[in-house]
Image (cartoon, rainbow, N blue to C red; front, top):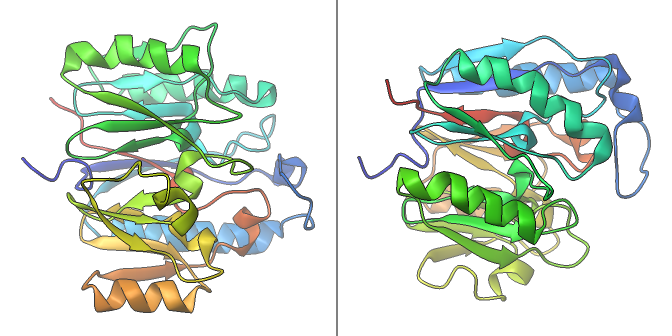
Length: 264
């Protein structure tokens, strides 16, 4: 199969907790509205389910304000799942909470044990390689341990740099298909996507870069007209999802799910 990086049989999401108003954020632009976030999250989950995939919806985790952002807890590959070691101390317990749910779906679940740190938001899986961005949340030791774990599964890992001041590598990019990446101009200028077709986000619309391709849909945050028009013209089946409240916590489309097709 040549499209396993964006065609999936399963996804895991987690309902936002009421404690999310205490979630981490780089800049305080106000507390998220929980009711509106729940509505957006329901739209997001419904869009995933509409593709025919099996969606596992987990209950809210009140002790972990950021736990709606499940992507940071694991890397899910066809051969197995890797439980991450988040770089934010308040989020370490989220990975342990996710591990048994992955074990119920995978034959192989391994874990980053440290001393390094790594979060799923810094990992972009393409058809040819796994790109991992160094960031404030992902360090060299975490990447080195990931390489040791996934190399036996036949995966090639390439370390790249997340732009200064950007939380995660995938804050600024997403996979659109086997050859195409949506990226901010600042990230694309680094040359990390040489050899791929790159579509740039619209001017002033950097936040649109955190979209996801899930089966035949591209889920993108609402409110970024230029980028949406570009993706529409390029022939993608676009679904716009409200993201105003998650954005207050530096979250986007990729952060809200783990997407995978486990080998039997």
